[in-house]
Image (cartoon, rainbow, N blue to C red; front, side, top):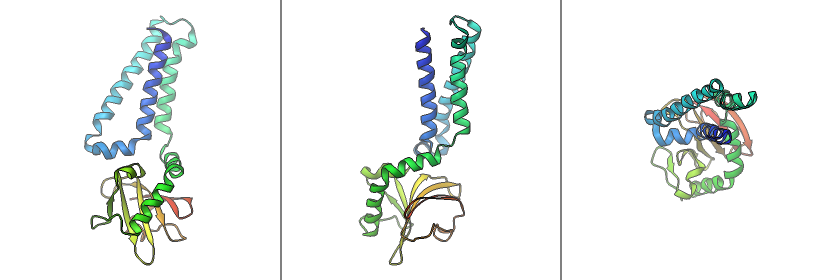
Length: 202
């Protein structure tokens, strides 16, 4: 196999690993934590194979040039370092805020006008065209009455009282509170824009 093809394959592996981390919340919702070991296992096995391959290239010495010998291993180390130490959560939330705010406002107005109904405990299943606005295609109504409206779009939805991240719209001029979030303890709250907040809670 040519060295160029080897680098392309290592690049494809790196892209797959980083895309998995970027879309982890969607994968978590799709597979549930009980089945998530399946894609994780595939990527882990793939990663071990590429690490072994990178080491074999160094010791096999079929590739000419000292730097070229180490390039696959360098790519592996850089991708692994990014995966382990870089946080994609807030950058992803910021990007989605820029892309989806207009559509999310449409959802807020639809809920406010009772065009979208909840299941009795505040959960609303979004129509297909709005699915991408929340990691699992659902939003949660914390409040919707004459006093105000507070709606949460899931960025990451943990099980039960596990930590979760939510993009919250609130009609109030103040950030969400423990009372606003139905008793959930807030450990992180970042303002995204007027009436929009990124909230980490458990």
